[in-house]
Length: 445
Ligand SMILES: Cc1cc2nc3c(=O)[nH]c(=O)nc-3n(C[C@H](O)[C@H](O)[C@H](O)COP(=O)(O)OP(=O)(O)OC[C@H]3O[C@@H](n4cnc5c(N)ncnc54)[C@H](O)[C@@H]3O)c2cc1C
Image (cartoon, helix red, strand yellow):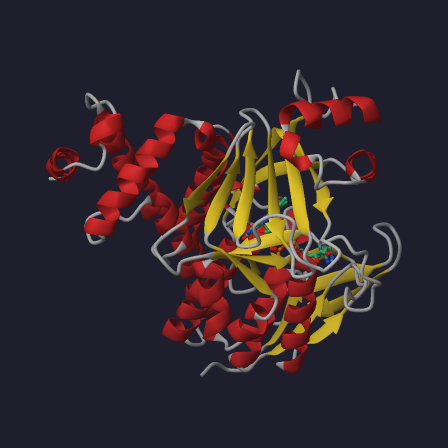
């Protein structure tokens, strides 16, 4: 279909390794460089950072026939389990049979590298890329930034080297290259809920667990070995903050008071709290994403987002689906492939960045708010009855492959309608009535 090219991918993360499978499918020679050692050779630490995979991710995996391999390491989560201080609520994510999937990042990355290698891609681990010459797609590789570098020339280079990409770094020095980076004043720390002695899960296995507490929250996703990986999102400074939790006693008292049902299930709370790092969260935007027909950015390298919609990797995988659509459409015309790819993806990357930023509020505050839960119930009941008239925002983002920018625009429109509906008199008792249904229908007209 295309004239075979010699292509380098910088970064063997989730996006780089899936891109390699696609480029092999299109008939190219593919070399992947990563500064880290081969994660398949590293002794597994036992800790498992996990990710939620949804429709866009599965679509990109299935289109190259590797979805079923990944399904073997995925756990479906069809609902949120919302742990309030005094009770537990459940909220379904979508329609019957719709789930997001918890997958260990390490297991997924190892599998993706195996699959890319089987597809014929060649990996070069412990190869640090310090720079790229954009005009002739030459990588500069070496041990240290100031030491001797080896040059490797390719027909084309993809920068899949994550939020702090060196490839983007070089592109940033071009005229008319726009770039912004914004850190949240909130960080995250991982904690662990171990399995029961019989390897069963201590909490409901098929739920995404949330402890919404306003300015901070705890979440937990299931692992195959019966454990859960928890992530505590919290401001760096202030009353309820990492800065405040400075010793064992303060951490234990804080959890006992605010997250009481976690005490029995997180046995090594203080130990893990002080052992595990506190990490930062960044939104990074830039444009353009490509340089002539020589260099292109993909995944977090061109759109790092905060993780509150669980879409970062899914969006990176969707970049690949769109790039491949352009490959099928424009054949050997890489200049057009690149420009159509970035034109199509940029508004959608900006939209998911915005949605992800906003979703912190939904997860950490609104899931504990009765009015919001009522709004969700009304939306669900209306969309069950009129699925062609109302797809909730979460479903548009998570269970469809319509553009993120469309989801953002329609979501805002639906929210304005819902704000009016929940202002109706006695809404708590009439939420499931014909009157409310007719009101929504009239507002939709
Ligand atoms: C706490 C948290 C939770 C998240 N949860 C979800 C979720 O539930 N669902 C979801 O879809 N997304 C989630 N994400 C986002 C997701 O992790 C990222 O979007 C995804 O990992 C991006 O993949 P990538 O391959 O583009 O970049 P990365 O995973 O960052 O990979 C980049 C690779 O490039 C290599 N590299 C970097 N620089 C160089 C260099 N100079 N030379 C050679 N190699 C280099 C690195 O070693 C690395 O292997 C989450 C992120 C965070 C932080």
